[in-house]
Length: 252
Length: 340
Image 1 (cartoon, each protein chain N blue to C red):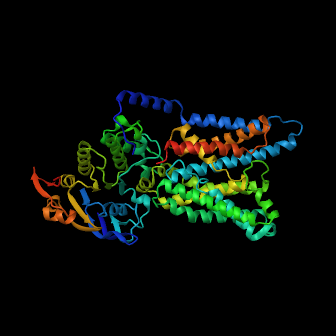
Image 2: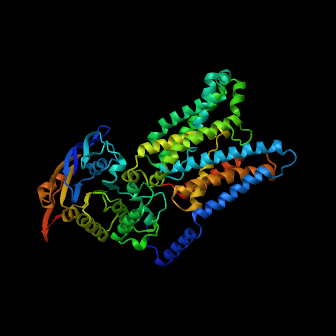
Image 3: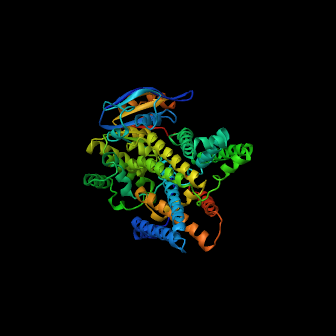
């Protein structure tokens, strides 16, 4: 379980994340939604110790993120940020192999190689394993980074806008993949996402943030209500139920 | 991210084949062996070429020079590559960020404050240690915040480095104008890069310091490859980023300080060897990049000195040639837009 209590981040006078408290149960896909600048990414980054917190605490399975050595935490929790630009030239296999670093400390053992093989296979990347990452398309590159996270073999996977720069087809594939990871591999996937309909159709729980605060949380059908969405986004969104999924009609 | 145009499939495939062919055909081990052999040839020629009856007098002197150059090649190669790794770029070097101007400023201020008399009383070696200590202190304070999560763009960091460098040089030259002429003479010796006439005692101390400063690097060696993935990924993979980067920056400042004290400032040398090493060995692994850049540094320094001294019989300082070539490379890298 990931437990946030009173999590706060300030940049000068502006409070970006304002006393956020939440408990995220293990298992399933958890989406964090909210308008631009609502503090979603900052909150996620604080959970993953990429950004220092100004107040509050985060516990990951009873490990305090503030005090737990970084290499121990790396076996529990992994994060991918939006822009995965590399200054170095790596093959797909090399990059996925880095996922084993928390376990192998840089020296790959046979069991690490097995993990890498399985991760490549899981994302259908085996045929690309000798290609350079910068030669791949955006969708493929995103999959390579997910494969790295799978090789890292953490219970919690944090993703900051994984659908950024992906077209519709790749977005759907990515969300299906994340669901599959939670079912088959028992991961807990926590992602920041902009499209409420992807959040609604593929998540088990949704957390909604506004102006740094956590305004509501619940199952997709609890969140996908016109009055709640109006609170979160300050706009009127009609919600239709299609095949049991709640879909917000925000295009018009 | 590089925008992928909807390129025609055929030329793309050919391009990939060609790239792969290059990678496969020359392995990093072969590159290392070749450059290592070349370095040995340069050293051998430098030591033994034209040796006559005076060997007993000439040889130790030459050995001394070669050893200095090898030491400088080690410091510059390792510090530049690691600096570029922890700062996730291939264009900033400790020298471009003003590390060696900082060391010269410290030297100048110390001479200004304690004078030649104080310098004599203190002794050359304690003074050297004092200078290095101050260097590490200031470098740690000033550069740490730049590179541990301030998130500034590369262009801004580059600009800050150039401003720092200019500021340090400006203060140094102001103080030098205020110095007593005899004190200035003492200082002037250390202001221009020269690989000849290095004090033997200073060399011994430098070896000891560099050996000591290399120990933390050996301990951390497996983390370097992960660091080159960038800050966020490195943290996600369990690296204590702030501590590792700070350690690397401190070691870099020691290396640069020792080099500057030994031979004077050489701004673009690190840029040349590091970028040549990346281009030649085509791997991201520091296990190859570091030795190759050191070996390239040895070839450039010893080979360059050999050609200048013996072939052209010039007394021209090698550093001028290096700065010229390095400056051109720097402009080329900037114009090619290889910085992100």
